[in-house]
Amino acid sequence: MLSDWFSDNETLIQAALAGALLAYSFQIALRAGVFTLGGVGFWAIGGYTTAYLVTEREWATVPAIGVGLLLSAVIGLGLALVLGRLRALYLAMATVAFVLLVQIVAINWEDVTGGAGGLFGIPVTVSTTQVFLVVLVVSIALVFFERGARGRTIEAMRLDEQLAQSVGIDVVRERHLIFVLSSVLAALSGGISAVMFNTLAPEQAGFHLITDTLMMVVIGGAAAWWGALVGAIIVTWLPELLRFAEDYRQIIEAAIVVLVIVYAPEGIVGLVRRVRGLLSGRRPPTATPFADIAAATSPDRGHSQPEAELPPAAGRDPRPATQARNPD
Amino acid sequence: MAESMLSLDDVKVHFGGVRAVDGISIALEPGKLYGIVGPNGSGKTTLINAISRLVPLTDGTITFDGTVVSRMRPFQVSREGLARTFQAVRLLPTLTVRDNVRVAVDRMRDGDGGRRGRWRRTPAERNRAENATDVALERLHLTQLAGEYPENLPFGTQRRVEIARAIANRPKLLLLDEPIAGMNREERTEIAEIMKSLRDDGLTQLLIEHDLRIVLSACDHIFVMNFGKCVADGPPRETAARPEVQEAYLGRKHDGGA
Image (tube, rainbow over all chains, first blue to last red; front, side):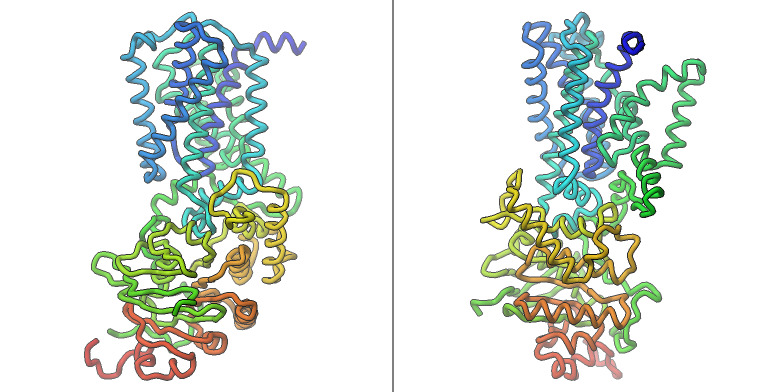
């Protein structure tokens, strides 16, 4: 029976739903070329704010989560302003530092966070169905966010920042917006997790949550919102499915990630698009959602470098012989 | 010249010790097709990058249609009505030809020309953007290819998509950085015809091009650049025949120093 399966797997379903919200937070940033991993820090901020307000101040759940979102939006904007000039791996490093900073605060601010031991006995005030509805609403919002004019803007920002600027896109403002939205989604995941699992500890909001969430986005694919959702489900269930492997489980998980990166770098979204392309006979484009990293080493993406006037590639640009370089 | 579409006053762009653009003062009248010629490394592309604000000015002032744009960011000067193409074709590989053009009109708004991007567009604004896309595609003979992805298209066609994107938002000034490089003779002539017809519609254009045949036949006025300076300007044929221009292109036989 469906209801039996549901109750047997309720914890996994809850984890997948909370994971999906955090994966969305990573996905919208990565798709726009904003390589931030700060989401985990905002997950903690949202989680602790909600837990504190619900437990210590006896607030209702919705306003408590709301305060967490607001706080994350403000801190997210502040972070965007401070780190605005950083790109690619430099931004990733700086945002990891932010995550570790939040974790240190969580360990030391014992009055609010319960210190290293964390918080226990947070009242469970949300049902799985409610969380499912939240994920549904966010998913629908992302459908609209990623298509049409904004979808094109996001693609342009990731693929070619200079070009985006030259067609009138205010890249700085758009990146700030993405930063804030990404922070808010992560805080939503954290807030919901706090009142769904009734415990919250600093160790949860560390590097392994970054890698887990990145795994979701890589396996699912960052090119569309539903990649994050599928990735969240797979990554949540993987340990369960690999239970037979016992001690070798983590090795198998790592091997799966490597295989996906090598053979399906755009994740499941990319695979589905390739199959759809084969069926329709129209070759879909190939472009990795992590093009930002490649761009970090490419000189012509910078803000102030001159566009080199290189001699034309052989055979591509037959110019008259009268255009010899001045011998001076 | 109060009615200049674009005027540059002693514009300099230096990269460390390299004086890529070194004191250019030119003015473009509206509705004309201008050409910039000069040897490789003479600063043509840097000049266009400076006008479109992709590189910072070391010194000088750029006035575009009555507005000083020297300190503006690239998206702002784009919203003022300046469009450009790039030396290397820069299309978005994950978008169709149609969407590659539409990305340039997505900020089209009634009233303020999209200077303050409102969150939602009205249906009328969206329709106008659709129409502008159709017009641009049609003009560059791309209507049949609207659903294709750029990487499936030949190089010359990709260049046409880039030009369609640049003209879609009905700019006041179009900067073209070697738009026909790498094209065959037939395609070159076709693009030259399109540039002329855009000029006839009143669009001011500034073109960097190495193919002198096209420059001489299409442009109303040319600027010759060498070592970051404008060494000559005037009507195409007479200017190209001048000794200092020949020298810039061919070099001197007896090197008497720069």
